[in-house]
Length: 184
Image (cartoon, rainbow, N blue to C red; front, side, top):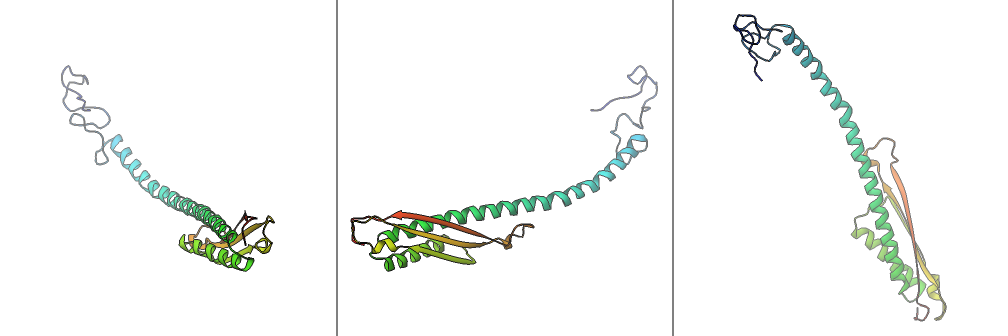
């Protein structure tokens, strides 16, 4: 917005063109850093003071934001791997419950669980699959269950989050009944 100061009978009332307050010469420039007068000097100091504060804010905020993103990635990796381990335990137990005998049930459960984890791209530093298929050796007519327990040590050290352990152990267990009237 441009204001006019000065002039006979004008709003400034001083009677001379271009005479104004606060160093605004020539009818209303805005008082920039290159201008003389109190506003020009103040604007120059303020600009110099705020120039460094933006850098300081970036130095403080950017690492905190990156740490927050890495923490979200760690939580996501843990939740996704936990879901995949559960699904592998379910698949292993269900396939084992259809086998004929505990040896075949254990073998098929191991294979099915391992195949599921490989298919989903789960990386475990240590993987342990425990199958309890002893009920498959019972004679027909007896109820029983097959259970699969999977333990996976998931790496987190590649995320580089300070205070986060380098690895976390996830475990899941699933039990399914066998058909008591089938030949197992």
